[in-house]
Image (cartoon, rainbow, N blue to C red; front, top):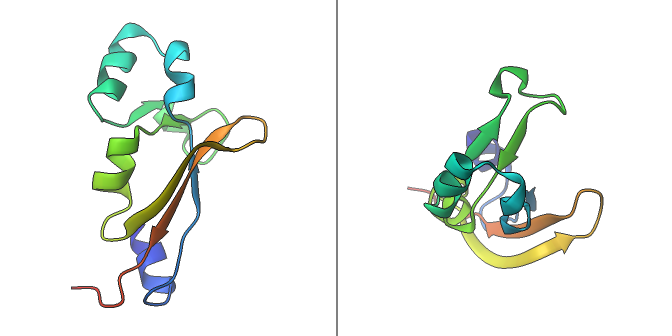
Length: 98
């Protein structure tokens, strides 16, 4: 996200897709608790950058952690209709970053 903040023009937009609430039933109980508490859930983090690594992003986490200092101006649950379906977030970079 630091790189996105650097390269996106002030007032520019970023489109993010993420595994959200729809995937809750695929998580084990500890992961479900973590997700419902608004924390990121990752599987196989050792394989980051591959399809073996999976991350599940609660809306609260995206808004309060991941997208900062961007402002999420739109959120569409399951807005990405591909395979897999994912939530869509539209963060906007502030005109002036402090």
